[in-house]
Length: 143
Image 1 (tube, helix red, strand yellow):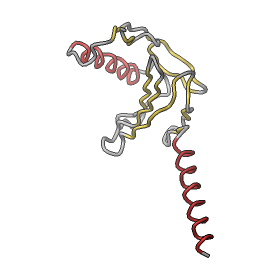
Image 2: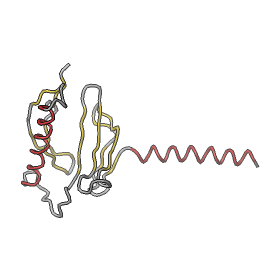
Image 3: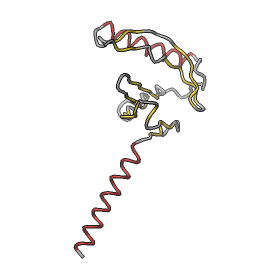
Image 4: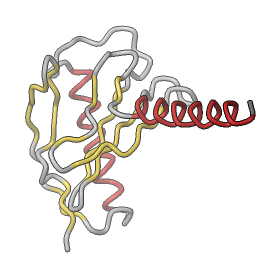
């Protein structure tokens, strides 16, 4: 009997561990349904931060990392009840410009010492979703 209880506990721990790992990645954003795969090319999905709980309107951050670059995707609505599904809408382009400005301000303050800012904006279609993007050389680390 002790042996079967020990087996049950071990199997439960294995199942619990597998269930936790399986639910971590890939990540599906609950509000939008956007699915983030565990890797994009060489970049691996390393973390998802839920900012919404402590700061309503700030959504979530999805972080990908590779040896030579990083990519962060932020999904948020700033508590706006209506946002057009159009990447050229002023509310979206305004937030995009503000984000670029924030990074440039932090660079000027010395927070980002190892970057060169090369702002190149483009619209990308990722599955059914259009995204405003900065080309992958926008914030290039100097080595």
